[in-house]
Length: 234
Image (cartoon, rainbow, N blue to C red; front, side, top):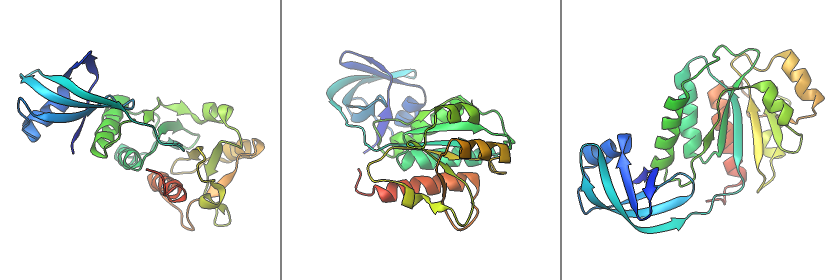
């Protein structure tokens, strides 16, 4: 099954355009009369039949629609941008495929990159979500300073990944069916000032591996461990 993202819906009619139209017509060679599966990214599934196709748009008739239940628990990773943006985009794609619910790009004291192309990254999210057949698209936040995240954090809902071989492993800190926010620092890790504040807030500090990981690898490891703890989830 191929899943397409659609935003232009009115009653029982939907309009497919832009990148999704090009993929449908140029790559998949769909034609008038074909049935395709659509989602709005907010949990709705639409089975549609193509009524007409032009260079600008395809007009679809919605034949069937269904609300898809969102999975619980949910994982939110707040992670510093990587110096090489392609590494962050790689993390974003894989994390979406693995079922992450929210990603917040961070600016930390040791961050070497302090801007990103939000529109480009949101396209990556949509592409990865439809490819992996997700009807609820993850939220990609705007770039935020670490301090804003810490102001919202509590020991009950937030874990901090930090490389120290003796740290409690993330898997031993997670509870099945629990939703979590996990903070991951930049290539130079969190600064001593940031770590002091994290400790003052009594946020649990966890390890992901006995080895030091790249930022984007740490993000994927956190997703993998979370999914392993909740491996019965669909």
